[in-house]
Amino acid sequence: MVAAATSERLLSDVAAASLAAWASARSGPADLAETDEDRRNELRLAELAVVIALRRHVRTEAAYGVVGTAGASARSATTVILSGGVVRHASASQREALVAAVLADRGGARSVLLGAEVRCDAQYVLAAAGLLAADFPEAAHGLVRAGGLLG
Image 1: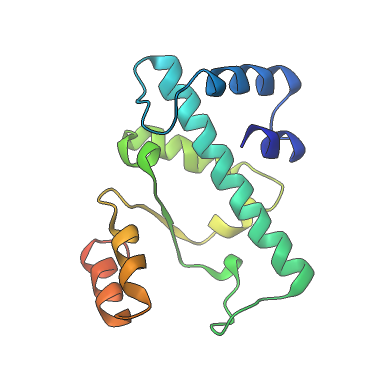
Image 2: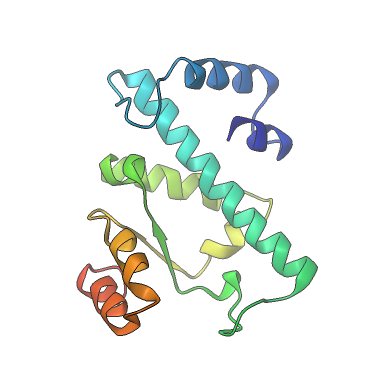
């Protein structure tokens, strides 16, 4: 993530080195945040991941057009769902700060969130829905609705 963020010019060399050193000292995803520094760094990595993912969606659409049967652009999304342990365990103010950072991005990520409602998958509903989607699409959709992720 640090390398991708550096290539996207989202991190200075100093910030990239600091974040990379912190990340390399971690034993893996199961290594829970214990300090304020850990929580700050995890939230920063989550923010970078969201910005990079949204930028890549926008660039891909610009280069190749909208791909898929639905024909919907990322920029036309009405709901954006944040997921993952860092987002799930973040406070409401921390999630708001993450969304604000994405909205401040001028590299394309901002355009996806404009006009979209941002929700958090606090119960890991998307993982279960993904497992159901291919064989039981109605059940997957119902689960996502019941989980409060769609209006």
